[in-house]
Image (cartoon, rainbow, N blue to C red; front, side, top):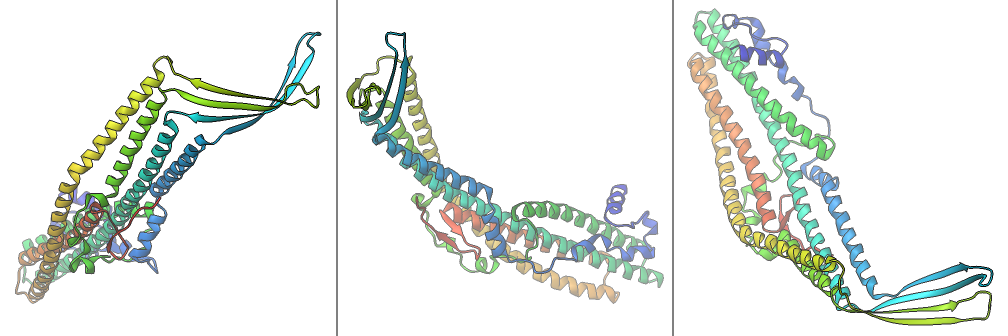
Length: 442
């Protein structure tokens, strides 16, 4: 009892001190702990507006877009290996009095004629890396959708649970008032009055738990959206009550963006290994220059051309080590791809079953809550007329609270299960709740 008293002191400016004092008039006015949720800012935005706004503010999406741009620049850079490099050179040599000072200037150019396929492999690797980052961007968009939807739907659910708790506190406060009136007329024993007061304490405690969860959901939503002024309504409930898109969509591993990203990464690592191997082979370079080897002779023109054939012999195993490391990177990428191939079908099957269970359960819970509400209202009228005991009313109140809480949890789970199933099939969920396929483009 002392634990409940301490909690009530935090929730309301006035609390019950002893069970024997529960007949005091102060108890009937105990609704101050829920008044803060009566006020809601004007003009709340819709789920669709909030959903799109969160996606537009997503840091993880912007970070992945930067990775895509970086990969695009690396691909452009790889094409430059086929182009010659040109530079302007000027030198001034000072010697003793016999040699004097000599100045020279020239244009120097160098081109790689043959690299044993290293440059071509580098281009292929950079292209596959860009594809991988692009597919990863699509996957990150799915993750951002999941974060946005969960933040919004969790907030909607917690707000409804607070409203349920608040309503129960108000109803049980009214029950305490009625019980006292009947006690004062000698129609109800003290024990029944005490039961209604204890039920009120329990309702306040449950409300306190809901407030804690609501505060956490609100903080998460404000971090993602910038505020928490949204309409409290299930966004995809009508769609889920019908036959959803995901129920007729078939599983195709090739449509999953994580699979496509992993496949491109494996191809990129394969070409990187080939490029590393090519650095172990001979290469041919051409270097030429044109200019004046002695600027003191203004009409002088000099040129030179050097064709270099290089064969790597020994560099302390650096190049060989790079080749071996790249081979291990290719194997690791292959294992990641194989993991997705093995786990994806089972994941989709599990999510499809979970979604079906969650949807059917949500529909059943809604019907149960409607029946429970009707039964409770009937029994409440009987209690007010003195035809039902406080114990009977308390049982109906608990049943009503449980059914409403289960209904909220049911629709919460159904929404999130639908989102995860759509993503596992390779689709994207729009604000209206439709699951659609979309191809990634470089």
